[in-house]
Length: 175
Image (cartoon, rainbow, N blue to C red; front, side, top):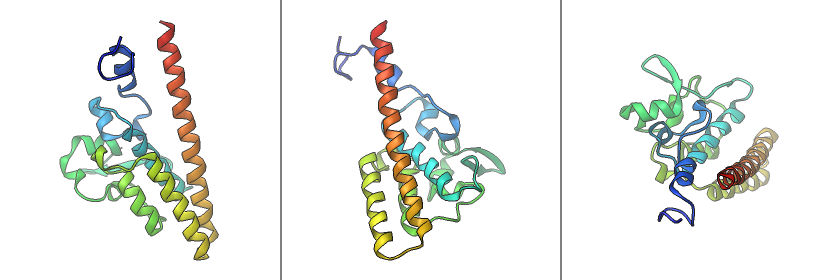
């Protein structure tokens, strides 16, 4: 039966697909309030990208707020003042190994408002542009190699999302 929100799937399937799930360290702010959409994956991937850029220093994407270390998404969800400005400023330890283009992309991926985040397609396009720009400017090989890691991570992330969706759909249809 159609519930108006999906194509022939019942309310249980839609609720399952939009419920908060995942590793709390990588959850977007809206997940903490059980309001999940496609942009939550962009937020999570942004945190993974920060870890790639800061490797090997950063082990977990944490935010420092009120002298406490917490999940970045949770800080943004709970504290309105934390939502003003650049989310990267909340990270502890600070992200210091980011190139200008990387920082700009990550700022948009980690923004509090899910409607202001780029789509996965936009992220992919910008990463491709960074790769081309870095090669043409003869930027250090580290940045080119890091951009390649981002692209591999993005492709893997998208493949896992598709696999998870198919598995959830099969699970739902088996009931």
